[in-house]
Image 1 (cartoon, helix red, strand yellow):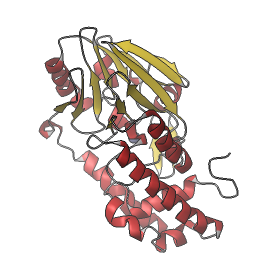
Image 2 (tube, rainbow, N blue to C red; image 1 turned 60 degrees about the vertical axis):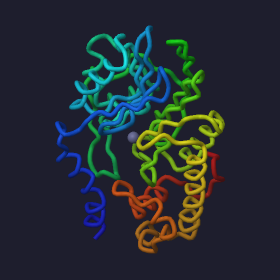
Image 3 (cartoon, rainbow, N blue to C red; image 1 turned 45 degrees about the vertical axis):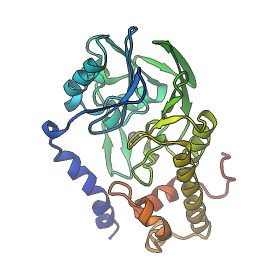
Image 4 (cartoon, helix red, strand yellow; image 1 turned 90 degrees about the vertical axis):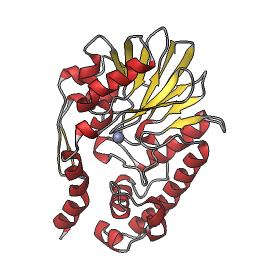
Length: 302
Ligand SMILES: [Zn+2]
C-alpha cells in the first residue's frame, strides 16, 4: 500500500519531465530595470545583471535550453557572460552550468553545492540515487556564509541560508537596485519542496523566510525560484502557512501518530485549495514536514 501511494505521488512530475518538448520552450525576458532582468523558460527563474563590465546570471535552467538562454542574454547585452551563480544544486537551476561556463564564465556557489553536485547520494523521498554530475558542472569558487560582488555599478550581497530548501541555498540581493533573488528558498507554485535528503528542513525553511524579511523591505522586488515577481507580503503569507502547518504536524507527531496515520487524517485540508500543487501535494507536504521536524526539541534549537 505504501509503495503504491508513494509511486503515485512521485511518478507524475517525473513523467512530465521526461516528456518535455524542449524545442517548444521559449525563453521570455522580463526586464525589471535597466540592468536587471529575469528569464523564464523551463526550470528556475534566471536572474540577469548586465552592463559594460559583463553579465552575471543567477541559475541556468536545463542544458537543453543553454543555446536559447545564450541568445536571450546576447539580446540584453553585447558583453561576455562572466559569472554564473547557483542558488542551490538542483538540476533545474544548474543544468546549464557546463554549457554556459565553456567560454570562461566562473561558476560561484555555496560550498555545499559543489559537494552535492560532486557526490551521488540516496533520496528516500524519490526512492532513487541522486547522481553526481561531472566536474564541468561544479562551481569553481565557493564560500561558507557571505560574499559580495561589485559589478556594473551594482553591489550584490550573497547570503547563505542553512538547512532550508537544501543545505546550500543562497539569497542574492542586488542592493543598489533592491532586487532579491531567493532561489527555491521562496517559491510561488504552492507548498514549497523541502529536499530533506539534501539537508533541507522545515525549521530552516521558516528561518529562511525570516531572513528574507530581514533583508527585504516594502519596496524590494523579489525574484522567486519559480513564479512571478513577488513582494514581502507574499513571503509573509508563505511564512504564516509554514508556521501553521508545522504546528499541526508537530502536534500529531508528538501524539505518536505514524506518518501514514497523519497523511490519512488529511490535516492540511484547510490549506489544500490555496497551496496544493501538482508537484507538492498536501499529502506529500505532510510527509515532508513529518520527516524533517524533530520532536522533543524546542523549535529552532538543535
Ligand atoms: Zn530546487
